[in-house]
Amino acid sequence: MDTHRPVQTHRPVGRDPHHTERAEVNAGPAEPEPEARPEEFDLPRSRRANERLHALVPGGAHTYAKGDDQYPEGLAPVISHGRGAHVWDVDGNRYVEYGSGLRSVSLGHAHPRVTEAVRRELDRGSNFVRPSVLEVEAAERFLATVPTAEMVKFAKNGSDATTAAVRLARAATGRPRVALCADHPFFSVDDWFIGTTPMSAGVPAATTDLTVAFPYGDLAATEEMLARHRDGIACLILEPATHTEPPPGYLAGLRELADRYGCVLVFDEMITGFRWSEAGAQGLYGVVPDLSTFGKALGNGFAVSALAGRRALMERGGLRHSGDRVFLLSTTHGAETHSLAAAMAVQTTYVEEGVTARLHALGERLAAGVREAAASAGVGDHVVVRGRASNLVFATLDEGGRPSQEYRTLFLRRLLAGGVLAPSFVVSAALSDADIAHTVDVVAQACAVYRKALDAGDPTPWLGGRPVQPVFRRRA
Image (cartoon, rainbow, N blue to C red; front, side):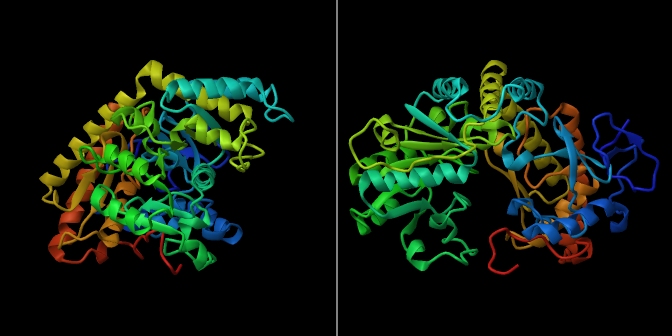
């Protein structure tokens, strides 16, 4: 029987029947050791795999948020496989995983209903010279799930969908500028957004100058921005909700401002889609955008995203209108049959099994446990859980209440030592009560160490190396 706690690789281990050639599972239970030496948590195979990745892949990962700079030094596990809410690294250590697949795997890894839907299509071909019947079935299913939209087009990633929304808004309005919410961390890998971040190298200033920002929750500031750029703003793009609920009347107020100033309202529902409700935040709050983008949870880890919206706008990217053609979305792999089958299985599972409600219940249980553990250790004002229950994050604050990468490193290090892989506390529906209880126990141990560091006024002795880094920074 395996245990949550990482083990030293020289100990005897058993074999998991679903392992890859390097994946071993832990042999027997071991009590967590809050004061164990850092070398007891070394990950030799993961370290070697990370070195190989850096030699071959810029940044050592294909997504910056998965980089080993996001984890304590020497404790960035390389994953072998996952099942449900658990993943195993190449050293054979098992972890309870949160934020799976950057929030995309909300049902749990290898969910049987999804994998069976995918398997059925794999033997039937994945990509053809003409649309497959699955494309109309997937579109019908999506529009039944998100009834506030009238048309949909599928792609493979969120960036393509949000950039298509921006291009469509510019074409429809004849205006060049994009207004994005400054308080939301990510919209696209494309120049219109990346040029606004500290990683703007390679983006012409002329492109960046066409993007302006507005603050979340502040209608007056947004209207001032729209008035300042009168007749120049093509769209307002934002996540309708993230770690805070929208203020009362805020989304409806944005809808009114967009109508009054003649710009397109775009909701980025990559995260809120399914986690807030099956129809996203627009379905929960009852405010209908002109365009919206979905991804992440839509495929439970399979690559599929969607741009959806009003027919009058979406048809500009089609063949049944009299205006200039808009190159909306045209991707070689956008309609792969197995990914669309995965999306349909996800939507069916959410509706039939009440997954959104389960995510909220699990998140509420976890948040309550973490808050109690932090308060008991005297760090309730420093380890802070925030966000909607289905999308929890945590803040690590220093002695002065300021966000601290050093304290985040300490906290992550203790979580990993206890077998919890948690860059956030975003839950999946596969978590069990035992997983939640184990996580809270590990958090309690981490908070005890956190208290010692606060009392010492310096977390450095507990870091084990350099601190973790923010993704968006100018220098490597």
